[in-house]
Image (cartoon, rainbow, N blue to C red; front, side, top):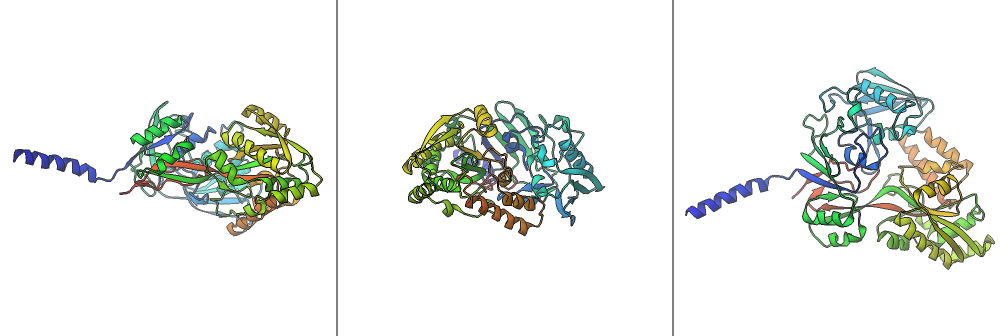
Length: 489
């Protein structure tokens, strides 16, 4: 009887904690951030730890790329589009207990736009004429010219609100207003955040989040299999994902990033200055073969320069569908025979492997290529800066960057006055419905002009424990937003 009694007691001790809802999580990351201040560094790994978790801005990105309220519960725009008035939430405090108010917003935006600012995205603040506190919880931002994209700019991690009293320590001891507070950083190993029990907004389900840094794909695989990591939102070895897919403990989550992967064409370089040649190249490309061969099947086909997860996206892939016979006919019509084009490829696998596949596809329609593999420094100097290329492959990862097509001096040298006017109108338009219409018109124009060969949206491929919900599927910005993450049975 004594043995039975002890066994029952032991079972009770085991059963008690087992029934409790798990509320801690370990997140795998490939790169360790160089610091933890999103307003003073360009590395994506900074935002992957602190965006929406530790720091918050006036606005924020939702998982679909939409702009949502954050520290500002609402905002107005003047009729001339020059003045944005932001109304702040009440009762917001920084992690040190101090109040967050309009003065902190004025300080943060003024700091970001000063001449000696170390902010990596100073262009986001370049159009600000002045920032004033119109009340304790009201901020007026006056612009030098209308900018309908301003709430979008304020959603970037570079635009989070910080306090003057703690700004000097943000790199190593970040203090924000978010639902998690900084606990520790063991350099070379992990950063730990804990739940902010005094958070002004909706409380989070997780009590502790540990970001562990594992760059090697095999080590990441082993850590997931052993249960040392609960989720790896950007898994570093896509070739190993099939082993997770067959294991019921895990879920492989495939979404998209802001990375439009394109076969860029030098629009001023003959014969690519002829739209018929560019269209022929576009029809010679089999996107799915490139996705399968260069990305192990991970990637979303695109037909224009816009992220498929964005609400304003238009699927235009059929406009440049794979049609080698049409490609041959267009080349003959353009008198472009016996072509040899120079293809300059940067280091990423999607470029090097994708370039070989595209070269083979172009050969099928009569276009030869001379491939040169470049390191990033060479690519930036020769292709991006010097415009000395015919074709190149690169992923454009800046969010909603279709406006680069309005810059005639940009490396692919597309010069269309009508498109430039369209983007100018978009830049001064704040009404959401009209912005959607203009964004969709812009996508249509560059697709019809076959400015570049639009290949695929770079995939965001992650592995998570099957009992976790709320992780972002897509990556409208570089973030591991844990505000909606929880364990479920």
